[in-house]
Amino acid sequence: MLKEFQEFISKGNVMDLAVGVIIGAAFGKIVDSLVNDIIMPIVGAIFGGLDFNNYFLALSSNVHSATLADAKKEGAVFAYGSFITVVLNFLILAFIIFLMVKAVNNLRKRLEGEKPAAAPAAPPADVQLLTEIRDLLARK
Image (cartoon, rainbow, N blue to C red):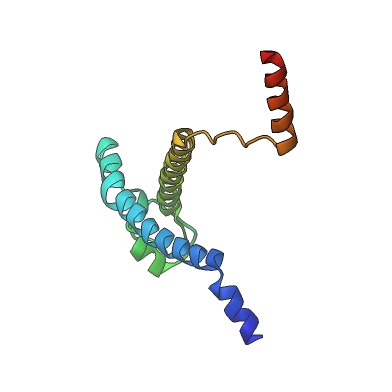
């Protein structure tokens, strides 16, 4: 079983997937910061100081706080503002991945178009011989 595991883990696809997951997690943090630290403050400024992260509905009568962090300490809350932020994160991330895939596909098409056309394969010996005979007969 250990040998099978070593064969499985040493395959290129598994290593590629691991690298992709690690890079994806780091990229997710970048997008998170982009949304929370740059986009949402701009959106908040445009709409009069809105902070989506602090939008919630109290599900308990004990909740009287104005901020989400304090409200969560007091009781159950429906944090729809955080959900809006996460959805925005997802949409931005999906759009960026779409652009990356599109760029890679365009690059592949361009590289395939630049490849020199392969020379046609030489005809088989019998076809070549018949061609020579035809050419000789045509000259007579």
